[in-house]
Amino acid sequence: MNLSDKIVAGEEKISVIGLGYVGMPIAVAFARKTKVIGFDLNENKINLYRSGSDPTKEVGDEVVKNTTVEFTADPARLKEARFHIVAVPTPVNEDHTPDLSPIKGASRILGQNLTKGSVVVFESTVYPGVTEETCVPILEKESGLICGSDFKIGYSPERINPGDQVHRLETIVKIVAGMDEETLEVVAGVYELVVEAGIYRAASIKVAEAAKVIENCQRDINIAFMNELSIIFNRLGIDTKSVLEAAGTKWNFIKFSPGLVGGHCIGIDPYYLTYKAEEAGYHSQIILAGRRINDDMGKYVAESLVKNLIKADIPVKRAKIAILGFTFKENCPDTRNTKVVDIYRELTEYGISPIVIDPQADSEEARQLYGIGFADMTDVKDMDAVIVAVAHDEFAGLGKEEIDGFFRAGSKKKVFVDLKGLFDKNAFSGGDYLYWRL
Image 1 (tube, helix red, strand yellow):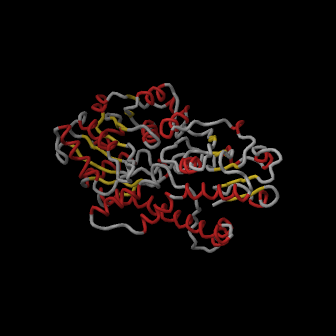
Image 2 (cartoon, rainbow, N blue to C red):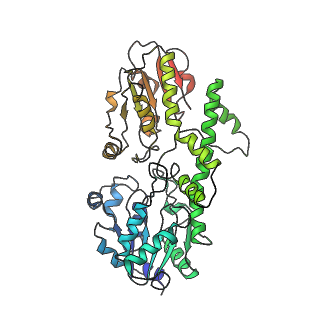
Image 3 (cartoon, rainbow, N blue to C red):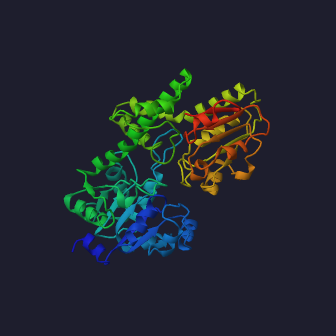
């Protein structure tokens, strides 16, 4: 029996290293089929999982309570497994260069506990070459083992969409790659245990790394185009959403919408590819142009809000503003690399101290990362302007009367910014409203 057969039979264990928004669903999915060790350095997180609580909201408390995943913060327990999945984040530094410290750290810990005959699969999004050129030397140095003869390496890029209950690990085609044909088949065999949508065998590890990183580059560029159109049409006095709805009636029009581009994938991954391109002597033009547009959208939204305050004869300094939503996307607690913070910070430059409301967000994470505390929905009253920044269900279901109640009684003009275009423009146009959206 090869390793995948032994895993199916329950004779060998899988370890998942990094139990965040990606690693946790992977661990839980595999635990339904075989024995899984879930490892994370964060002991508080491990204790939450052990108590049956899911801070990521990706699988839910009930699933965590009933899973057979063996949660641990003890690296020595990794020695019990021979198939390892590394699912740690790959962020960027302040200067937008790749921050490989999490994946290097995971490789060091795993290397110190790696046993002969193991297969290590990385899921983290990286530029082509990281798995073989950065991670393998660390694994070899820490373990004293030789890649190829003592252990094998593979890559299978994560495609989990946080907060999305439709596109899950099981329902998305899984790309797999291995350092040789034998490893490829082992990796494919293991993932076939849980992935119902099918397995795609990539030609090489670098091909798989490149495929993943361009998926998000493509989306980033398309959204940047929509954002640029929004800026243009706003100057021309044309509603962007109406234009896109009209253009969308053509069969081959690709449907994207303008918006803030944050999170740990779309807003970050393009920098990984352009960094590697620079190393190869090529300076990206389209990818970085798109990044510049998307990175500036928070500032653009804040400036547009201020212009509307002036238009409404509302003093800008110390204006009462509420921002509804802080996470990087709807119905998800993740605040990492949220672009809503750019709106917040830009408004403070005008002497405004906005209140932020987000019933879905990880409030402790937001406080630690940004120094921002959240207010309650009941605090949204007597406002001069309200920004609906994230399409959480709680906000999308608001009625006009509820929105009316957010504003200062008797105010001649209510500035309402609907970033996601959630509400009927006609219901808020004219009268005592100044309605604005991307």
